[in-house]
Length: 314
Ligand SMILES: [Zn+2]
View 1: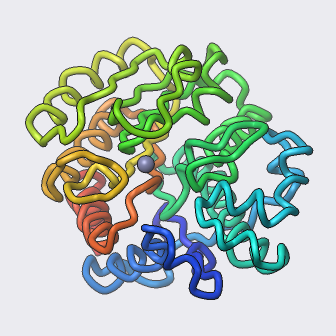
View 2 (view 1 turned 120 degrees about the vertical axis):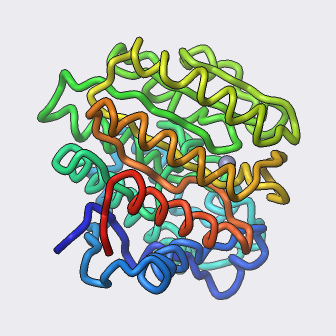
């Protein structure tokens, strides 16, 4: 029997070893999948596999000039923040860097449909929340969430969406693309002292909660647990998209926050339960968090959700 969990072996990013120059474990996707199979006991055959997003799909949100600009390796290198990538043939970057993100985007589209069908779903990638319509940034090339939401609206135009973004970084791309649509509300808790500091995008975020550097479990979870329930009640969404970034983990070199593994597990369980208890479909995306410890924490947290929140019995 299949579970509404989306994964492709094509999610992992391997570009002739240069991915190792970035402070990212770019193979975390496969490791989380492995954890769910080996440690949680999910059958290999239970996962859904996505198709990669075609240009036509990307154009639902992105500007054609922006997509064209990705045919220059130097532009890809800037967005990936790996300058040496500028020296590689564009075809190699397309295949080994952008193609995995096309699969991730297809995974978010499929995950959204599965969430509406099953009440919940997880894409073991996605959440590239810095990508805007005309530009990428912060390792985000394609705006998978806005693309999936616009795709849904083609057949389900009245469905309201609440984006709950708990990645350590402000979700400025999603806010700039979707924030002024009356069907969307955004709830964002992020480190207010780090990238991207996008005050223009923040104007579109109804529930905007910057927190201080090195915030720890008590303060962070207290804020979430007091502020999220009224935001859900007030916005009464027909879908919650949860950007469950794990770069909030203590020691993450990019996030600058001090949340424990146990804090992340409690956080993810709380968000998931908040949706399930209200019978609101929820789609979880992995978003940021690429330390060597990240995959294990994500695997434990998803295992906790599966067993203790949605009641999967592997
Ligand atoms: Zn992040």
